[in-house]
Length: 313
Image (cartoon, rainbow, N blue to C red; front, side):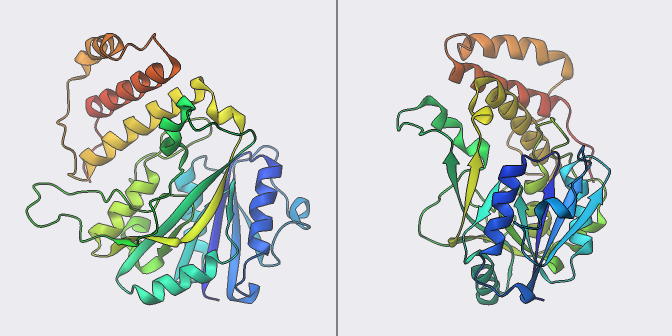
C-alpha cells in the first residue's frame, strides 16, 4: 500500500460521514494501494462497521479511541498506519476523486515537503449571498482557496526574521497530507497543545503538527491540484457558534505562537483580562452587530491565550 486515509469522528452526523466515505469509494487510485482508518473517538452510541457497508470503500478498518480529543484520535490512526504517506480527513470532508493520486504525485515531485494540502471549498445547505456578513468568518470554518499557484515554505525562520514564522499557506487539517517520517518528533511528543474535544472548540492541533514538521527540517506546501468539499450545516453559521469558534481558535492560536517562539505579542498578566475585555467591548462596538460580537469574542480569546501561555517544551 502507498497511502492511508485517517478519519477521526466523535458523534458524527451519519449522512455527512456517509458522504465522506462515498467520496473515498470514488477515488481513482486503486483501492489495493491505500487503506482507510476510521477512528471512533468516544462516540455514543459507538460506530459499527455494519452501518457503513454500503457507503465505505472496501479497505475500511474501524478503530476505537476512548480518550476524547482529536489529537488522541489522530495519534491512534497515525500509529496504526502502515504507509509512509497519510491523509487526515474530517468526517465532513468529501475528497475530489483524484485526491489520493494527486497527493502521491505531489510528494514524488516535492521530496523535501513533509506536509501539503490544497483547496477546501464549501457546500452549504442554503445559498450564501455574495454580500453575506458571515463570509468574513469563512476561514474559521476551514474554508480556503489560495488560487492556482503552488506555494512552498522556505524554512521555519526566514533570513533576517527575528522569530519563527508560520507560513500563511500551510496545510489545514482538512485534507492535510503528511509523510510519516516528517512527524516522528510530533508522535513522540506527548505535550501537544489541546485540540478539539467534544464541544470544546480549541483548534491548535493542525498548526502544532505543521510547526513540528518545520522544526524537523521539512518543508510544507500548498498544492492547488488537491481539492475537497467541506460540508457546512446551518448550525455552524449561527452567530453563537461562530463566536465560540472564534474565541477558541484565537486563544489556541495565540498559545501556539508563544509555544513555538513565533509570537509578535508578549504574555500578559491574568489580572488584566477583565479590563482588556471591557475596553475591547467598547472599542469594537460588540453590541452593534453579530459580526462585531464575533470579532470581540475572538479578541477575548486572544487575550486569554496571552494570559495563560502553554508551558515550554
